[in-house]
Image 1 (cartoon, rainbow, N blue to C red):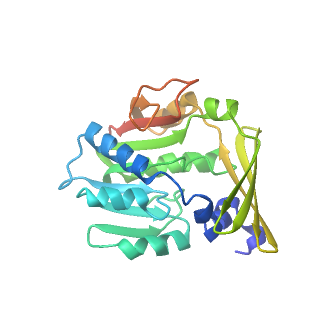
Image 2: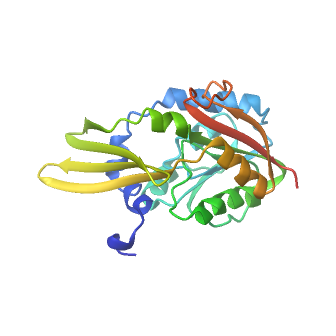
Length: 247
């Protein structure tokens, strides 16, 4: 596939600039969330096999594995999976895979974390991700989607800002249009300019509740922070949905 015909997520997530821009992500916050989540779900390290859907370079997968869980991470980005595979073992493995396509194995838990949902222009493609989660869960298996809280994000959208990392300048422009939160990214690397974007469908709690119900998944809880505080539409930083496959 030529660069001209690539979708934004195929080009942007597979460039090293993506990892430079987000290199300061809060690892401790991610680890706290995983610790809180595994405790809340009462998971058993020796028993529960976890699928990390859209795992990136595997930061959540690696921490889960350090807690004793067997973990499989899948992601569309070949470069991210190549990096993640440096840490693979008998109980931790990674694979390049499009999350719209059903994966071949079954799991006790499927995680889709850090707003790794809503990337696709066609709503049917986003629904396919929910169907992948459903198909990947054992009976009574648990799914988790950790998404941005769209109402708060839209209300507090920062139109423009600049970030400098590794002597590279990132000019960021954001807007909300046609149901999507858009981030336009201009990269200034020495004398070269590159342009990328991020585009995420601004799904709401009600949107997710309907999608999960239509897929045959039962919503059992919803949180608004990585400390698992109750979800509040106007105030919460996150929309964290917990659901079960009752088949």
